[in-house]
Length: 441
Image (cartoon, rainbow, N blue to C red; front, side, top):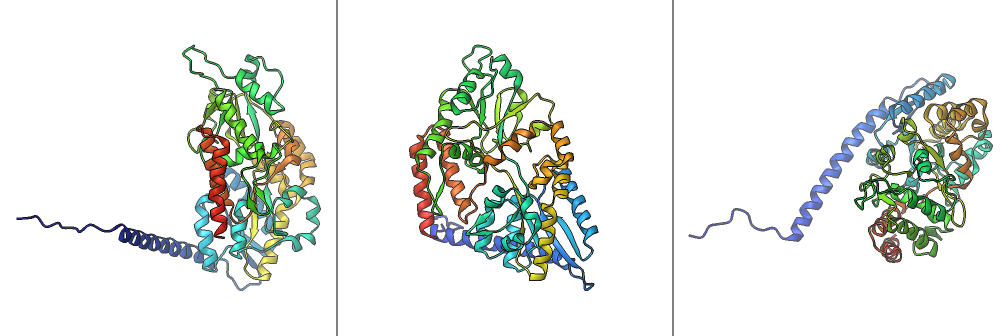
């Protein structure tokens, strides 16, 4: 007797239908859970006593920085009895995005949101945020904010957010390893950086494999890789956006990516673990002598001897802004005006001085940077002067709606080139992928 199969084979089309159904069910559960969470947050903000109570979502880390922020929120509440801000830690920024989108769809957004600026274009498409240029134009604090920071946050002639903090990236290095290699001047050009990386690459035991490399480069296609590479593109005179469309196959892009590949071909670079290019273990252990990162790094809190030099230049000086921003979500005119009052407080000299000294980020307020308190602080941490001096050459990543697709495709191209593919081919493949995406917009 033939055995009877208990289960009939399911066609691939039915598998896709089933998979799609489960995805929709899962998304529905996630959105429902988020909306329950959001409604609870909103409910606590409603009281009929004439006080405007605002909810603010933030993902500030580490907890010590969160404590500094809360102290400053409390100060705002004490001096503004008619406006009370409740700061809610909504999880890490990557964890927050589903909650934010659910809040917008469910019409229960927070009043104020701290988030990274590259999400701006998506928020604009959702009509979820309030443009701020008219409000800021009337505010005396505008003249105190670094102009290039505001320019980097402008899309379609509108200012969509204001900076909570700023910083940029440079190259941390080990002075002891430089001295041992006979290097007396820090690199100022790409050629000097390449030459230093070669001298700092040492095979200590003669087995043909260096135990010490000149530099760490981030392997991966994620945002950290793109963030680290963009200063090289800009320094070569390049852009990744032309007329609001991706443009990755320029001579400057090829030159910048070829430089990274040259460092690898020299044997003077160690690649990080995949998507872990921000980790400092190799630098602290002396396995690499140089690392691209910013003042938020754990290196500054470690016991290792270190110094910092500016990003070396090719055609021009350039570095990338590392920042966090504040958005006013669309609610009601009264609540939006109250939320802007808090943003003015954040941009003020007093807030920025206390926040920067407490966290190590750079002030966005010019008066704060020049204040006696901050100058005393920076004299205790002189490496911060490198990042301050780089700010005029610092640029922000694009904030257009398709940035996530752009970053993903560019990251894939960088990763492919680090693994041996020619920069021209890698960038051409990325450009073709993006053109397909942009055609469907």
